[in-house]
Amino acid sequence: MTDRPAVLHDVSSSTRRGLASGGLLAVVVGILGVVALAAALRWDDALWSLRSDPPTGPWLVFAHVLSASANGAVLIPGAVFGAACLGWSRRASAARWLLAMTLAGTLAGLSGTILRSVIGRARPLAPVPQGWHGPRVDGHWVIGRHAYGSFPSGHTSLAAGFGTFLFLHRRRSGLAGLAYAAAVGWSRVEVGAHRPSDVVAGIVVGGAVSILAGPLILARLNAWLPDKPMDAKPPGAAT
Image (cartoon, rainbow, N blue to C red; front, top):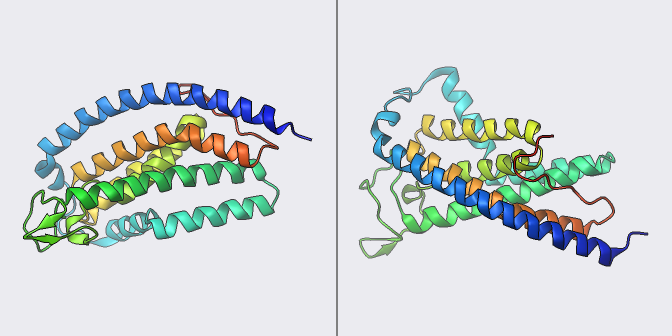
């Protein structure tokens, strides 16, 4: 039988180490993100002009499908269902990692959604005055209104949180997660839902949240399911 107090002690120690390394990495990522975001804001119009105008054909269909795949109402239930199927097929390790990625992505997507609701930047194709409006416009609350929810991209935040978690702890397979997040970001611009700077902001938010929350997610799952604790690879470790 597993010694639960010993497991909790080990989890606590690994969590502290993970938080320390993750915090430092988050600072580095944050600095690089601010630089990238400043550049994206500076060149927003030029980058926006690179999208297909008007977007048509197979690329637009692909962009819509890819964009829809990162909708929280699609990705989160789908991932949870996938984790359940893996568990039923006795692939417990894969199921636990998929669940951990889903939790990281959910927190990242929720963070992006809260930020965009408060910032109130108009979407590029919305029939409203363009600009940064905040949570109120002309004396009315616009929190939750689609037209004012452009910055950061919630879809990209979720996908970036999902992919970043996998990349940090399973480096080689995590490259596919990062590629997915980048592809989702492209799709959001291609379908006209966001500007490039919205997408960059979504990547920064999703990555930072995943880095900071990752050790806590691992600790909770290891405490709840201590029979086969998941090993968190330190940033920079290859697998």
